[in-house]
Length: 110
Image (cartoon, rainbow, N blue to C red; front, side, top):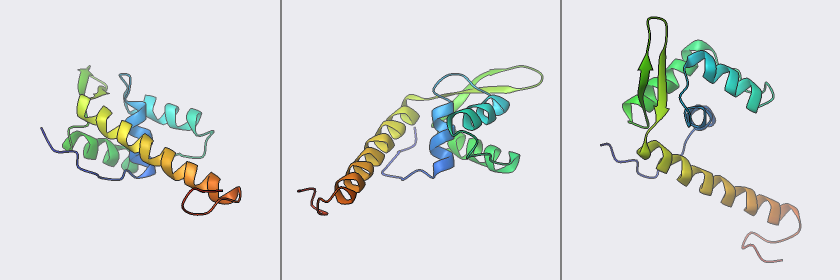
């Protein structure tokens, strides 16, 4: 098993990893991204499959099923841990941004 470290995910890696929280394939991931970003994120096939290959190499997703036309992948326990850590990081950044924009200082006090 590969160490997941403290790597910060790119937006596309984060969203693709979310798409694999249930069994999914390339076209399904494209639909997931379009639906859940209201069309804002529309990666090309090369970008999408590059992200899938990177997630496979890091062992954050694994092959779930294969038929003659498509491969379906699913997040691994390690991938879920990475995703949970990333959600915490994003939440902290969001909270800090809200505090500062609402008149608090960078230390989080009002």
